Structures are given as C-alpha cells and as structure tokens.
Length: 482
Ligand code: ADP
Ligand code: MG
Image 1 (cartoon, rainbow, N blue to C red):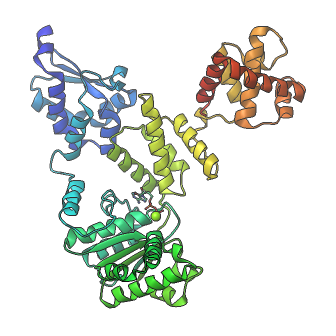
Image 2 (image 1 turned 90 degrees about the vertical axis):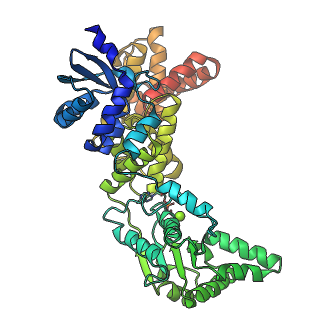
Image 3 (image 1 turned 180 degrees about the horizontal axis):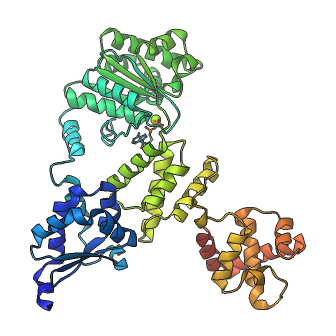
C-alpha cells in the first residue's frame, strides 16, 4: 500500500514520537543513538525506524521496545509492528529524514517537565547591574559533578552560596591542578549572586591581585585599590600560592583579608597546598587561612570521570560511542582539565572529517599530549586491538596497505615492488616504535643495521621529493594511530 507511506511526514512523526518517549530512555542512549535515527518507512502498519549503528538498533529491540510501543501507538494508532534497522547513511549530517540537531536537543533537553535553563538565568543575573567581576557563567555548582570524592567540597560551596560569611569563612580549597578548584570558586561566587543579587562579589587570581598592587604602587595611588577591595561582600582569590615571596603583595593581601574578615565578609581562597605547607608565607597569614574550612579537592574516580565526560558531550551536543568515552576516562586519570582537553581535541579533529572520535583517534590525542607534557603512558589493557604496540602491528598494516604479505616484507626477496614497502616498514618502526637499527635488522631476516639505516634515510629523502611517498607515509601513520 504505497499510499500509507505518503500519509505520514516522517520527520514530523518522528518528532512527535520522540517527544513522547524521550523520558523513558537513558540520556546517554538518547545522545548516543537517537540523534542519528529516523523513520525509514511506514507501510501496512509496520513502522521501520533506522539507526546509524547496529548497536543503536539492537538496543532498541532489547531494551526499549516494549516500553515505547504504547506511546508510538498514540501517535500512529494503526501501527501493528515496529522494526528497528541499521541504516548507516543516517550517520550523514544532512540526511533528509533526520531531525536537525538543535530540534533534537530541544526535544530531549528541555522538553517535558525538566526545563534546563540555568545558563540563561545566570546571564540575566549578570547583566542586571551586578557588581561582579570576572565570573565565568560556564562554571556553576549545578554543572560541577561531585562524585563521592568531592561531595564535601561541593556541599561546602553550596553552604557558602546559601549563607555567605557563615561558618565556612574563609573557605580554603586546595589540591592538584586540573581538579576543579577554579570551577568551584567561580561557581560559588555565582551561587552567592544568585541568592543575594545585591552583593558585591569579586573573583581574581592571586596573580591579578599582585599585578594590580604593583601597578597601583607604580602610580603611587594605592588608596583606590585598597578601597575597592575592602568594600566587598565576598572576595575570591584563586591560586594564592602565587603570593609566596612577594612580601609587599602578601602584606597588602593580609590587610585586605583582615578587614573583610573582621567586617563579617566572605573570603574564598584556593591554593595548590594546605596553608601549613605553603612556602614563603608569613606564619600569621597561614594561620588566618586555616581559621575557617579547609578542604582538599580529590581526584575523581572512574565513575565520576565518566559522568563528567558524558555531561560534557551533552553540553557540546555531540554523540560519542560509549566505548570511546570509557577509553578516555580509563586513560586520563590525573586531571579533569586534561581529560576534557582530550575529549575536545578528539571531537574537533573528528569534526574536520565529518566523523566522531574513535578509540584510535583518541589514543592518538592522548599520546600526543603525553609526549608534550610527559603525563605517562596510556593503559591499553582492554583496547590494544586498535593501537600499535609492536613490529607485528606495523607489518600488518603496511602489508595490507601495499597488498603484500608480512613474510614478503621481512623476507630476502629483492624485487623492486617489495623494496619500497619494506623500507617504509623499517622507517615506521623506527619512527613510531623507536626501535634501534640493530633490533629492526634482527626482525628483517637478520639484516645489518646499516641496511636499515640506509632504508630509513631513503624514505626520508624520498618523502621530500615524492608526494606519493609523503601521502603513503601520512596515510599509514594515521592508520597506525599517529
Ligand atoms: P583547577 O583550578 O583545580 O586547576 P579547574 O577548575 O580549572 O581546575 O578545572 C579544570 C576543568 O575541569 C574545568 O573545565 C572544570 O569545569 C572541569 N572540572 C573539574 N572537575 C569537574 C567536575 N567534578 N565536574 C565538572 N567539571 C569539572
Ligand atoms: Mg585553577
């Protein structure tokens, strides 16, 4: 019955169905599978829904089918059966039957009874004549994911936001870089403004503070500076370890601190260490810092890291394979900043090619970062299938690329067709795995190290003059995850 196909507008029908079922489906599944989904056909009471991945269609069958059927029937009363199918073309960005991303996000994001309008509210708040300085509205206590590890610090920030200058004064948060100190400080400032819109809240880094003092002293005008900072309701100073051994600034900060504190104003500080371990600080100041609440930010657990990454994907409105997210959470453990950095870089690079990050591309980003910053090795326990570890892996990929075999590559045949792939393999093993010429020679039928050296040099020279060689090497490196 061709007629019935034309009777429905696929997009509008899918929109209507999604609006009814989205609350039944895990948010991560919505983001991972449903963005690339659409109605494929509706014929003789059979509704076919397509997903870009087989995981998506299988998930629907096993997990959600019985839950959603009654809701689909509300939209299509004559439906007798729903089928879920793989339709790879749905991965294409401009597939005509897919809902546009923004519409999709609106349906699943702010539909139903769960409006998510926090950012706008903050905007209004900040534009409404607030005397707040340097607060970044992206950082809120609502989008900080505390996990079990940082429940306490999160609760303390909420408490300060609800009742500034109460028992947690000063609030002193310390810990390693990239674990969320700045986020919490800024967010607490916002929370205070949300609850007490008339308060004057200033956030600054210790470095800003020092620069301003130095400037004021240079102009011989320190009074305006003093007045400005001593008239606040809440002063937030980030990374105060920067005051170490800067006696004048430290002194000025000490006065500001005392005056605010004595007048019952809130002070929030962060540092890389607890007060007693701060070097180059006056003892009086250290003991003042310790008068209120001291809390350390902890490294998040695997589960928390996963939750942070998922929240970020939601924020960026991108869908990433859960395995890839787990791979990042598993491998980047010491800094949330860095972990988010890996995610963003991987998304950015994939988008250039209209794709989404894969385990291989993510491994590459992590490796690049660890090379730049010496953050340690990636742990590939479960994932080694996609990442190069040894000579075998290189040989496999090169052999496939040139349509030869591994034994030909390492063998002694001097046919011209095999010479180039062999030299390329040696070069890549040297480049990527950093093996010695001797060790490479061993693996290539016990060749002499000078032969290997010669082969590697030949590839390097060739790349300079031969574009095809350059392309081959680039393609292979990419294939190898570099
Ligand atoms: P620090 O000041 O301790 O060096 P930041 O506050 O700059 O760290 O955090 C680095 C990044 O990680 C920021 O983008 C921040 O939003 C994010 N971040 C850290 N911890 C969390 C968390 N628990 N939930 C959500 N985002 C987090
Ligand atoms: Mg910081």
